[in-house]
Length: 301
Image (cartoon, rainbow, N blue to C red; front, side, top):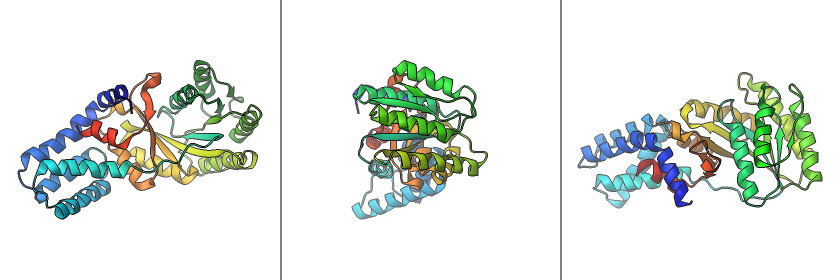
C-alpha cells in the first residue's frame, strides 16, 4: 500500500485510533503487570470499539495463550502481540482476479454503494481493464441517474431500464452487452432493501441464475458494501446479505466518519470473507485495496 494512502488511512481512522488505540494505551500504561485486570481492560477497549463481545473475548483469549507460551511479562509487548492477533483475524485469503468478471455490489441504501461502484470502475479502468456498469437497482428513485453520473465520470457504458423494471431483465441485457463487447468487468448495482428479506433473496437468486446461465465463463463476486459508522448494525446487514447473496468480500466505507471501526473485525470473524477495499474519504482515490497489517497499524499506532 502506497505511503500516500497509508497517510490517508491514518487520517481517516483518526477518531477510531483515538478511541481504540487510546484505550489500549491506557490499559498498557495503567498496568505494570500482565494480570486479569489488564486483560479486562483490553477486552473492554475492544468491545467499545464495536468489535463485539464474542470477538473481543476470542482475541484476548488468544493473547493469553501467546503470553503464556512466550512467558511475556511486559504489557507493551502484549499490545504488539494483540496487534498480530488482530491482523490474523482480518487476514482472510483473497481469491485471485480472473477475467471476465461480474461484481454484484450489495448493501443497504445510504452506505455509499453507488459511489463505491464508480470508484471501482475508475480503479480497474486505471489498470487497463474494460468496464460496463449495470443499474439493477430499479426500485429506488434516481438510483440509475446516480450511477449514470459515475458512468459518465469514468467514461464507461451503462445498461439501464426504466424505474420499476425487473432487475434480472436489466442484468440479462447487461450480460449480453458485456459478452458482445468482450468486456473484462461488469459491475451490477443492486437494490438495498432489507425490510423484506425474502424478496431480496428471491431477487438475488434470480439475478445469479441469469448470470450463471448466460455467462458461465465469468467469475462472479458478490461484494458487500458496509458503512463503518453503523457499528453493530453493519454486522446485522452482513448476516442478512450473506444469507441472501453469498458474500465473497467486503468493502468498508466512511471510515473517516467513525470512532468505532472495530465492526469490521466482527464481520470478517463471522462470515470469514476478506475485506477487499476500504474508503477513507470522498475523493476518487480514497477507495483502495485493503491490507490487514496497514489497517491495524493505522488503527492502533
